[in-house]
Image (cartoon, rainbow, N blue to C red; front, top):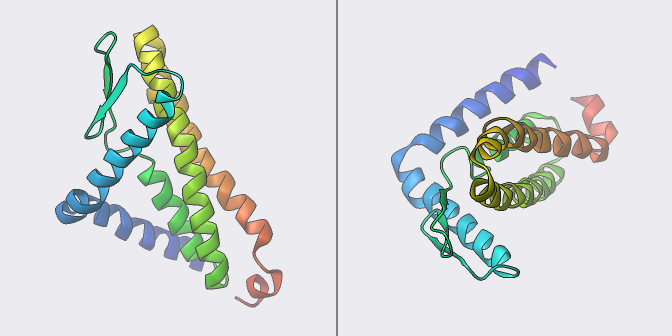
Length: 164
């Protein structure tokens, strides 16, 4: 357990620092965040044609309300936590890669729900928007990473875990 915790903390630190490095932000984080905005607009466009995306911003063409998907709102931090846990845990690499892939998709799907709900909450009521944005959704995204990790643990082969 100590080995896992130390390795988890080390990987987590390296990945969080890497995320902050300017070339990574310019060539990975910002394009990824812009893609999240485009996917959000595409999904919203299925039932509301009055939404556009430019860069990392979603905007209503009806009333001008806009939200910007900033650092901490693109799901990357939750993915980093999950990846760190899965890489630190003694499991076959095949299981780690499958877990990371499924976990990435699960976190990003929930994050799309988060972004779209906040987009409409912000147009409806600023107090509710702030509360959901700052408290509820932040916790739910990290909880999603934890749940994915716990479910993944159930499928890791037992003999590998016991020998490590």
